[in-house]
Length: 115
Length: 110
Image 1 (cartoon, rainbow over the protein chains, first blue to last red):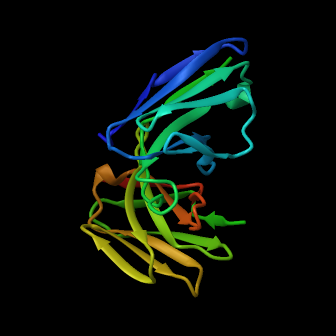
Image 2 (image 1 turned 30 degrees about the horizontal axis):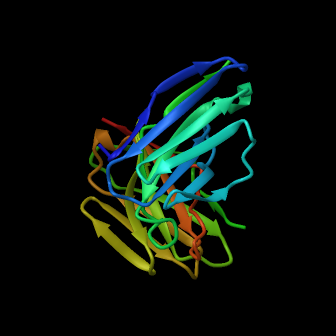
């Protein structure tokens, strides 16, 4: 148990669907992250939030829309995805995003399949 | 930019010692982290080297040599449960985020 919970664990969606991924951390951290993990590739940073403010958008297509209502919750809203967006989406948290970001706490991820 | 290179697969037997290497290219960084990820599980933090040398945490040790642009994770007394993917990650500092390697799949055989 890492203290970071992601739901759902698995998601299958069509290209015209709208769905949301949810992440919650119980560690009292101030920074939260979305990563994309594809087979045999490095973890790919998507978004960073620090104290609820988005501090980084790593050139992510607009069909991915993050939301961070407070420091404990992070959402990733998905719409009109493409099959190449199929991947494991990981949420992570850290104490903050500038001085303590070498130690990330990850959730188990949402395995997304886009048909 | 930054890039890291790790072997894609390593196989070893139970009870043995295995070293997973990570070479990198960067103009500057604060330190090197290591993460473990079991199939279907969350990546979990193992260790962090801010300085050159060896950091030991139980059966796992991590090493960094800035002059050689190289680090490694050493796993001793291997157990079946150590079968997992291991990722190195550079901390570039200055409020920038970690850059991860592609990961090394370790298989421990009985």
